[in-house]
Length: 344
Image (tube, rainbow, N blue to C red; front, side, top):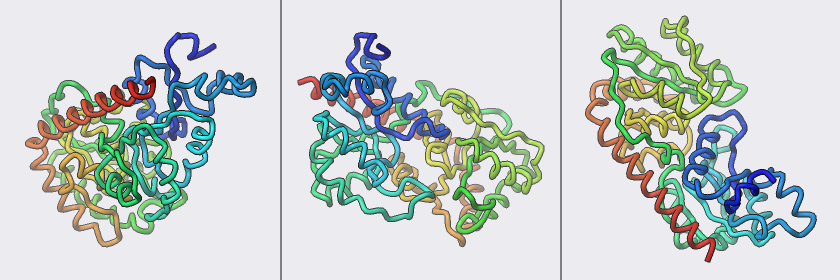
């Protein structure tokens, strides 16, 4: 019967995987690696769950526990699934989860106060960064542990060699339905200026789409910097994305997990933050100096930050990679401790 036939305990996963976003899909894969002694399945989607629940054989008879996965999931969108799991008497825990707005589809401020009674029933609360921890503690939630972004569990064991020819990876996105550079993303003009300067100095620009729809924005960006003939890469797996980023000197990212992947291979990112989750991650990596919030007036700040980081990035590679590996170890230890508690 699918995952159950392996003989391993079954763990359900709540997350945003399957929607075409490489970051979300890779966090599901990262959870699978961390839980390699278990069978990880999407909660609410497994065949076993659909078959057995009507006969009273679901819930704790089926699942050892349920993990609220990576991404900014302490958010109104995910409350129903969590409530459903708790109603079934399942043990829940979070793994590198963030709190607040998940992206362009939500306003900056979202009300998460209704999460308080749910989280108080969790057997473990591991969050992405210190901002999420502080917000939960203000809500009266104790035993919160900062474990890092879940995708950092994919950090590569060795620091890759840098390319002899300077390269910069670029991954941008913006509000679906908007044209390139509309609204707050009008600040992309600063990014264009920086990339033109780097190209004049002999740099290669590598556009990488973390979601297929990002290819449109990246294609327009490349056209505006005189590199319209350069194809946009749309990697399907984290390993493929790592191979594209690893030779680069630094990365410029709007999507959070483009920056996370960059850190996984020791490539310093310039984060163009569009929600608080971006700053939270950069603070967790001691890289907050390289976070520039996206806003209409930020063009010159983006240009200056990109040009400065192009010079300093080689000296940051080792500490960035070491920090990513440290979070990987934290995630591993946290999972080990929660899994032990879930079977007591």
